[in-house]
Amino acid sequence: MTVKVDLNVSLDGCATTTDQTPENPFGDDWGRLTAAYVGTRTMRERVLGDTSGAGTTGVDEKYAAEYFVGTGAEIMGAGMFGLHLHGDDQDWRGWWGEDPPFRIPVLVLTHSPRPSITFANGTEFHFVDASPKDALQRASAIAGDADVRIGGGVDVVRQFLAAGLVDRLHLAVAPIVLGSGERIWDGLRGLEVGYDVSSEVAESGVTHITFRR
Image 1 (tube, rainbow, N blue to C red):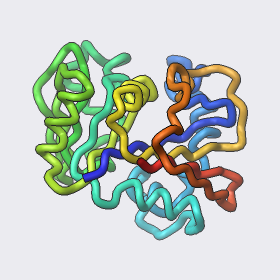
Image 2 (image 1 turned 90 degrees about the vertical axis):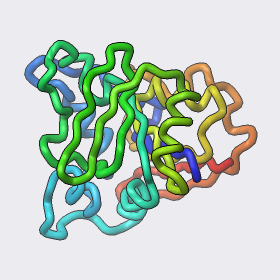
Image 3 (image 1 turned 90 degrees about the horizontal axis):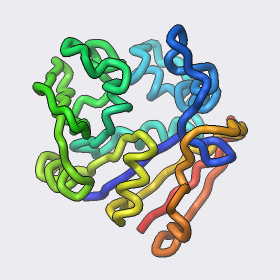
Image 4 (image 1 turned 120 degrees about the vertical axis):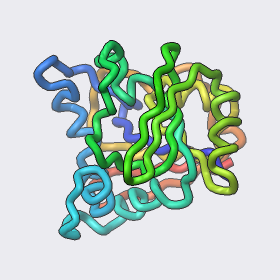
């Protein structure tokens, strides 16, 4: 079992954007940051519901396909699920509609647990108030021999990295500068020690950097 992370980040290390508005809750910069990943065949099918086979099939696609392979459970923060905007809405079922791309049990870390949500495609959202270590123990029990993915957001990922709980960290570094946002490396000086680091440049210009314990 591997504990893994996959994040899109900018050249200046930002994994979140700051140009959101009520009318545009993701902002324009999020599209710039994730364009290469969203453009892959795998992500178009799993996230956008496009079953036409359209999408890129190069290096970015290789990493996008690996995102889903062998994963038995996921952990994400309340913000990634959308509770920062919809915490008072008991009918909120996440950003992804009735066909979320996960298709596995997902633990959502929150200080305000709510009833679990299940979907026909196998996705389950369970809302838990737990430390990274405790959440990982629970997710590992669910995943069995499969991997556990720490999905985000960036603050949650940093907590797992700081606790030494991540076996593989993959960063898709987009060739853009955001100038502001939450940075993956804040408080993690020397993280590379103890990992083998490799990199691969995609046709899109995105650099895929992988840290393996």
